[in-house]
Image 1 (cartoon, rainbow, N blue to C red):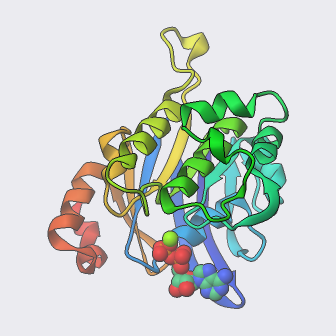
Image 2 (cartoon, helix red, strand yellow):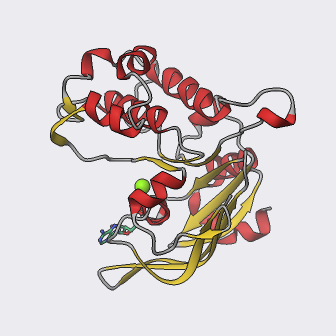
Amino acid sequence: MLKIEDLTVEVNGKTLLRDVNLEVKKGYTNVLFGPNGAGKTALMRTIMGFSEYKVVKGQILFNDENITGMPVDERARRGLGIMMQRPPDMSGIKLKDLVRVASKGKKDPETLAEKLDMKRFLDRDVNVGFSGGEIKRSELLQLEAQDPSLYLLDEPESGVDLVSIEQVGLTIKGLLEEGICPGESCNKGKSALIITHTGQILDYVKADRGYILCNGTVMCSGNPLKMLDEIKNRGYEECIKCRLMM
Ligand SMILES: Nc1ncnc2c1ncn2[C@@H]1O[C@H](COP(=O)(O)OP(=O)(O)O)[C@@H](O)[C@H]1O
Ligand SMILES: [Mg+2]
């Protein structure tokens, strides 16, 4: 579904990502690990098409189509959705209007918000004065409205307290597994690429493959739970050597 080939990305002339290769198959959930500043968020934002990230080499394929130079709204229309690590405040835009637009007017914001206990936020400006956990729920609400086929989730558990993490985890599980049912004709498994530091999200979502990004490049890929274990035990300093680890 998503194929990233030899991707090199610059921002303001500075190389943030170098020769990145990564793949997410249809119905798969892959996890991206890496220390702070490795370029994980830059990779997510490049996949989504944020304009400051300039692809200088390589390409991004989505459902076999080259989307490398495509604007962000075109990518969203094709089924890419992002949950940002730090989304901006949107003064003057009410959450309910954003949710309505994200669902192309097909879903009732009130009904969607009910599930995430976000009804009282619908008439507020998006993210303005929201707590860490409320921002994450607002992002999930927008994603649920958009219903993308590939979810890019940038640290969904960051800034969320221990009690709310369950709500976030179960919501993401619900989003990814939505549409999966017995029989091939209705198997519409969603795909996801998830950035996590703590791995807490993996208590709720089954991950298929893990990648470790260091210094703007993918050092290795493998079993995500094994990787998480190695990172917890040995830290990221060892990640240069992780080719040997898998
Ligand atoms: N727009 C930008 N302009 C300049 N530097 C940037 C920009 N975005 C990210 N960076 C830098 O790129 C590096 C990678 O950042 P980021 O992708 O946010 O890392 P991570 O998400 O892995 O912690 C950091 O050193 C960061 O400061
Ligand atoms: Mg980040």
